[in-house]
Length: 446
Image (cartoon, rainbow, N blue to C red; front, side, top):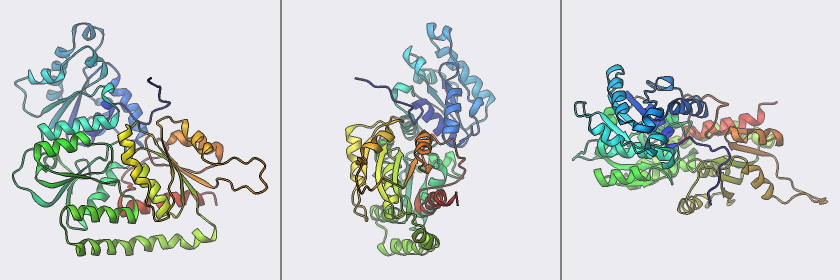
């Protein structure tokens, strides 16, 4: 029996596709959908992604066929062709991607054929079916990326032994995506590995088009980018590994060792790189050590985040902040197979403490799980309260946090109470930023 999700923490597949296209330089979306679809995405996606902005051709400038009653009755493919031609005439871009909404897919418009029938246009236009019933933003990302891999990226005969492609970090859905990719690129460079991140700083469409010469693909997700990874392996014969989004020193060190092993990099190179970062990293952590002990900054950590962030945050809370990872609620809809893959990430902490893990996309569920996770005070002579707590979540946890008096650090979509430029939570530098934000919450009222 189907259920209704209370305040979902993601946009639809069309929104995920738009966010990916916005992140690609000089790439123009052409939306074939009902009036308002593109604008509604912008209103929700922009603020939810910590004010992502419209980019080169987004926001209220997104080209759209804006189909209405006429097209719904008689079909909208002619209207789409008109929109494609006018967009390419008026808007200067290097790649155009047609994406579709629910209504036109329901009436049977074939956007793939419509694009193919425009024979006089250059080969720099793709079409991807992205109605909401194909999934959420993560699936929209995967669908567009798969098409780029199959139809845009050039097959290469030569492999560069220390070049990798990184994906699984979803623009917009990950509010820190650009800073995270910058840091991942930096830490891989420490062991001599060049990384194509597609959506990072100063990356070009040519970088994407020619990334078929990589020796390895790294998917920073246990759940998403499956279609893209398999397409890369099938079309370009590039293998891939899955890694957890690394946050902080210990996770990033493990990440570098795993990548190094896959690329046959000498252990000494990896050891030296990690050792150099260790000296820098813990020199900063030392600053808080006295205060941490003097005023007792240890807390229970509660996480409400998606499958990319939840395991990494819980691990960081346990093994780097020295807090107790009490409860993790994974907020995206997952299959049993996905959940089984994620469960493996919540064990083996250095602290020996394993959090209680729940899978639930409903925004109102966290308070119930938290109440149920701790024995209530039934007039005990001695009672240990579940306190103090810090919540790592989204703005959907704000009301509960305020009612309960718990500090809240927004780390996941939607996060319209903070502006994000190039901040990262991934990697060595990201771990320092996350610790800095967490501890700042605790001393902000002093």
